[in-house]
Image 1 (cartoon, helix red, strand yellow):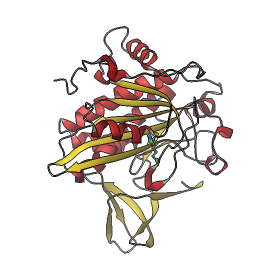
Image 2 (image 1 turned 30 degrees about the horizontal axis):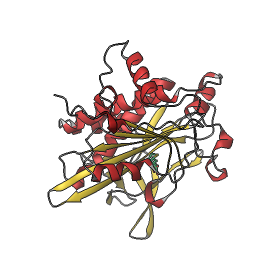
Image 3 (image 1 turned 120 degrees about the vertical axis):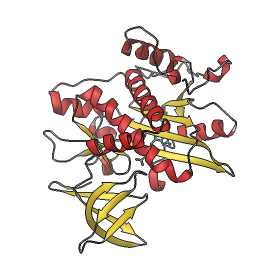
Length: 314
Ligand code: BTN
C-alpha cells in the first residue's frame, strides 16, 4: 500500500531557482529525481517522496524545519520534503544552531503524519537515524557509520583520532486533542565540507562525507548532493514504512547493530545532577537504559549523553 497520496497540483513543487545561485550540483527536484531513477536503474524511483514530486527546493532557507512546520500546519501532505541548498537559521537539538553552509550539505525536513502517540516519537527518530546510517554506509562503504543515542550519526575512524558527527536529526511535532497532528523530521548531513568549512568549535567534532571518504580511501571526492538526497530519502522512506507497519523490534535491533553507544561509559545530566554509567540497552520505545555504579538503572527519555572513549569525549 502506498502511504503517500499522489500530489495533483504542480504548484506544490514550488521550486525556486534564482539565477544567481551557483551551487554546482544543485540538489533540485530534477536532479534528485534523476539521481533516484539512476539508483533504481532507470525504473521508477520506488520512493513516492521523490517519484511523486513531493519535493520543495529552496536555495537558501531560514530553517527547513520552520518552513515545513508552516506547510504542515496548512495541511500539506505527508511525505512532502523541504530541501535547502543552505540555511541561515538552521536549528539543532536542545536549542543549538545547526551550521548549514550553502552548497556544502544536505539540509531537509520531511512532513510526516504518523498515527502514533507522542510518547512513541523517540523510537521514530531512532528509525530515522538507522536510515541515515544505511544511506551513509551505502556511500562510504559499510561499517563506517553508527549511531550515538538518541539519533546522532557518527563516522568511525580510520586514521582519525576520534569518532565524529556527520548528521543530526531534529524532530518537532504538533499535537492536537487526538494525538499527533504532524511531525517534521529535519535532517542535516555534512557532505562536501572540508575542515575549515566548519566553525572553529566544531572542527574537532564534525566530519563530512568528503572528509570521511578521503580518510578511508585517500582520495578527495566531491559528492553529488542530489544523489546523497536521493539515497537518504529512499532509505528514510523504507525505515518509516517499516516503523509504521509495526516492526519496531526490528528497527530497534538495527539501531543496536549500528550502536556506538551500548556498552560504553556515558555521562549525562538528570534533574540537574551530572551522572555517569554504562549504556546497557535501549527499550522498545528507544529509551536508553543506563546502569549506574551500584547496580541502579536509569532510563533516559531524551536529552544528551556524552560518550567516553579512549580518544576522549564526544
Ligand atoms: C542536531 O544534531 O542537533 C540536529 C540537527 C538538525 C539539523 C537539520 S538541517 C535541516 C533541518 N532544519 C533545521 O533547522 N534543522 C534540521
